[in-house]
Image 1 (tube, rainbow over the protein chains, first blue to last red):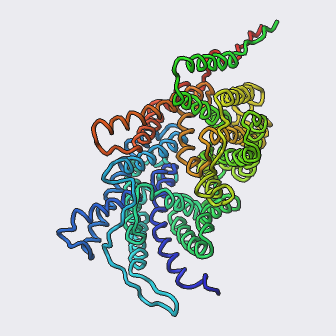
Image 2: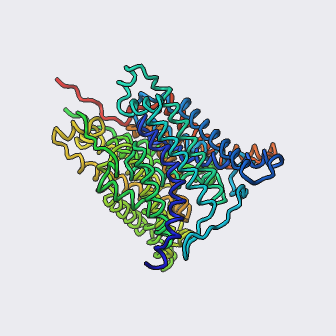
Image 3: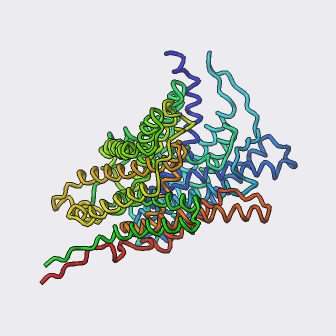
Length: 304
Length: 331
């Protein structure tokens, strides 16, 4: 094992993978329920980062700028802002198109994504320049091996992602809402006949997916402290590819795909930065050629 | 007896050419001419995208990637010729050949991308073509021989109004004739129901790859003209957002309607310029920090509103009456 394949890279990859996982979950949940690739999902991630940034300036005087209470409030605000925008997007843009051809929803999603990005970029006190994200929780390294350290940021990223993912699993498996979600994703019409309020389930899905992206936005802001209005495009695309890799519509698949993606990208970047940029698309192409339904996805056939 | 059809397209194009030439005499300045040129380039891009997205019903989001291939290939060739002997007039045959070479290169890329991706459908295809468009752009961004992130500079300004109009005319004529041929009917069958089209013996994959290649060819030509109009080929000119702009033209005009694409290409190019100058005027008058990004906000809203309230676009799948073959009476 050379200098590239070491424990440090695995740690970095898991950290990146946690952020991808939180974004990918929203993609896969929305796809599972309404069969829509929500292009604007990466922008919910960006909104989360900006909401956390705003929270810092709102509560800076009261809470002293850093520490756990500050981080907690930033997390709540980031999740609320992204979840709220996701809910609003669903209500205003996607709901009227629910029973129209699928492509019109997709094009609308592209429009929503552009609208959010350029609106943020055009509003003078937000964009379009880069902003340094405040150091809410100062990081320090912890030695975990001869040549490897794990930063407290990495622990927080992995920890927050794990807690949220466990929460989601409990929600989907053991609550009435979760049962309704699974029913809607299997067969929307049958679910409706069983008395499930499909629109309500869809709204919850957007809210949860959006708030997870918002949490990822805060984590990414803390870890890679530079935010700008277009920061959601690439992570959004990569998280989508992670969801496809795991099998889109499949919740454990999205997490698995995201971690594979995070580790693969970290190793590829260590080898060559251009390769790091391209590895996501290489993975996408290989998956689509070899196993289009993804690692954990179910096989589907054309219905005549 | 068959009455010979009036070549309306030629008449319209000639009329447009004459009007612009007349306007040039009465103070139609270079800026307006530039807008006319840009609109015509967008006509080429939008009509060729409409062949892929509208006529055969696939969904490509990476059209500007093909345009980038055409721009860089033709730009490299003409820059080289121009360096060897800077006599502009003598180079027009070379320029046309360079444009065609750029188109062919883009078509080859289109085939290479088409084979693995065209078995995907709808939203998957959209994402993959988006990805490929970005990959092409990233590749150009990293080739130092064509300027890398600085872009390919010093491309001679060979794209004159007449040349662009001629290529736009050829593009629209070729694509219209294909759309109205028996092949075009097969393509529409694939759009309406791929499985059924397959069952009646239409080679769906073959058609899709060919259409992808043809659309890419014209996108490459359009990209070449674009580069020779702006005298630069830069990776940022061919980003995802510009593919979306072309997409908006196709959907605003009516997916499947070539007339719609032509009209929308003109309307939206002019709208962009009007918005830009309106914004800078507003900025000057009110002294507020109004950024140039607002026009993209308007674009995005426009796209959403079209999708919500007029999904089929301005023209639907109809064509302007001038351009359709009159239905022959069956007796």
